[in-house]
Length: 135
Image (cartoon, rainbow, N blue to C red; front, side, top):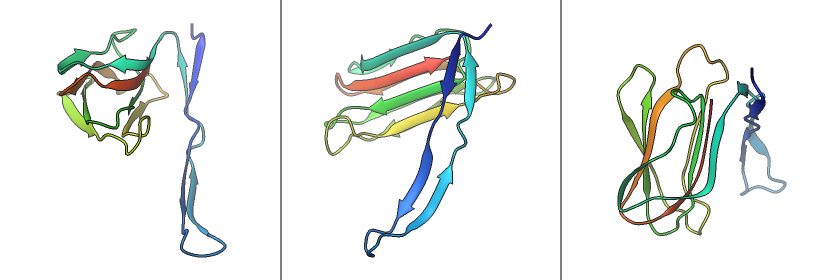
């Protein structure tokens, strides 16, 4: 029985700041897709290593994944395996300032297809990342 409600609350907004007043060119609501979850792992300052470090998954398959590179000194590679698929990688670049690096989001509100079965982070140094996974 689900005891957690994981809601992705977001919208995409593109504003033309060269004009005054600045018009919004695109505004798209994501309509708050919600995952009824039972377990979650959250580490606001997950530390990578000089190499690959596995993220502990709270279940065999997770349906919600959030990783943000908090470093301003180096990239972090997110390695993940989709359910029934082969391992994939995505590089999250460092931010211009600490806390503002690249973001990886996977959010599947229906636990009927998809999911991620393995997750790890690779970096060339000890770097911080914010990590949240739920199932």
